[in-house]
Amino acid sequence: MDVEEPLAGGNMGPVSRRGDEVLRTAGPWTPNVHRLLQLCADSGIDKTPRPLGYTEDGRERLSYLPGTVPAYPMPDWVWTNEVLDDAARLLGRLHDASLPLAGVTEGWRSPARQPAEVVCHNDFAPYNLVFDDGRLTGVIDFDYCSPGSRLWDIAYLAYTLAPLTGALAEDPFTAPQRAQRAMGILAAYGLPASMEELLAMVVLRLHDLADFSDEAAVRLANPELTRHAAGYRQDAERLADGPS
Image (cartoon, rainbow, N blue to C red):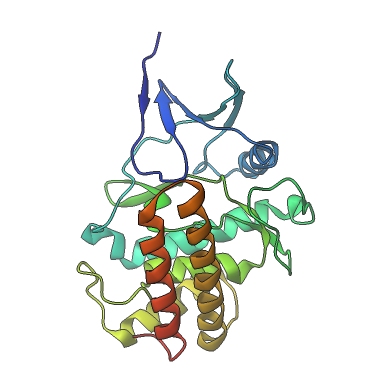
């Protein structure tokens, strides 16, 4: 029998691995998440977990995606143009596959947001991407997905991968280069939006994420999330004047 081992990295609930399966706490949102993952599989996307049902004690079962999930400080290969383009294109494929569920506004862990164009991942960032030798091979952690706009998801990817987060120790880019990379995400995804529209959505996204983090810090008794919230608000204020 395969031994169950905890997986590191999450701060919203316990996650473990048993053989080729990942086990997570299930909730009222899980049926919708499994429907989304099945739509991805049916669309030929091989970079998302497959829903496998539930354990005897009611946890959800997902297929395990082998590879490396990076963490801060990010390795140099996260910042390549290839990763930037591949991530934007994968997000577009996930959104297109999700269209049959975009009008389902109930039964998600996160609130649905208008315009509900697609189902958003809501945390599509390097730390939820899987890599093999620097090549993007998967995306994980769909628990908080919900309907929303395409730009809502793209904005957070730009924030974390351009990156528009400001001065990270491992970030080799200047402000003009970050802006160029953010526009590159829009181009690779195929969404004709301006830098002004993108930044406005990033600022809105960060304020929403700060409020969520403050609430979760109390609910989960995790003070680290309060520090995250403060950082999001600082970045939102800075980005209101443009990328830096």
